[in-house]
Length: 319
Image 1 (tube, one colour):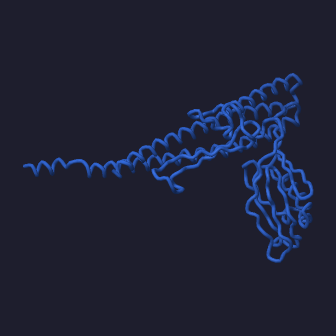
Image 2 (image 1 turned 135 degrees about the horizontal axis):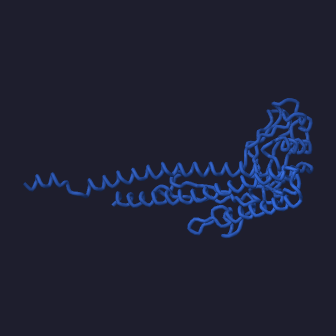
Image 3 (image 1 turned 45 degrees about the vertical axis):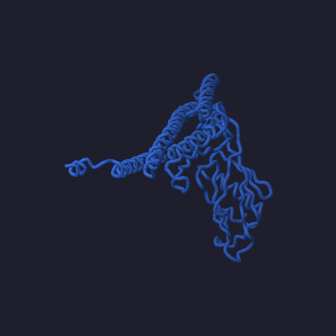
């Protein structure tokens, strides 16, 4: 019967949602442990930033830093749910993925096969040391450009910015005679916070705004001025800017330790952003299970009213 099919489908959707929550909570638990490791790494870096440490002291501190980094990679490579790797961006089990690679899981949380409300997609990014910016080797971060705003009508040449991997390419920009005549765009680096770049309003860089090369130089300066992009540097070349993400966690000197502190702080911020997202999905699934359970109960009641005999009425009829 139709009701019977809906009841079975709803009960399966409940189990699906509960499994999804288990998977998400497993991933979030691993994130929490990695954050604990990062906090210890920061403590080590702060200790190493003090010049009361001798050469042997720094060597011992670096040995712990190296082991902690390797443990983060192990967690990223081996955390699984039912044999599915969760934290390596979809790479082979036991390995870490490409830097900043993201894996999307789709959970069937309704009985239908169409519609945005039937499936819940959850994206989880690789959390290896390199992806978090503490792997010791500089990498090319993923860069995304959105919301390119054209100059005011008649203000000058069209402007555009296109991102490919870690490089942004600029077309000719408007001569910036006024703020209204200058185009802007927003961008993200390695899936982090969103920034809006406007060469005209970026301090003394407004003079760069009328050429491709000038726009690239202005953008490099803009990146330097953003505290949230500490460790990210840009290299201008003609009409492009290639971005590089530093990953050093060396504690060989005071200055190295200071750099390590900045990189670890950025990694903690990035990890917390993903933890917040996973926690939100887990809490949402609580409501999903509650709603589906209510649907299943009401369907069972409707089916019972159709199929089950009303004992009182039938007893009266018999009498």
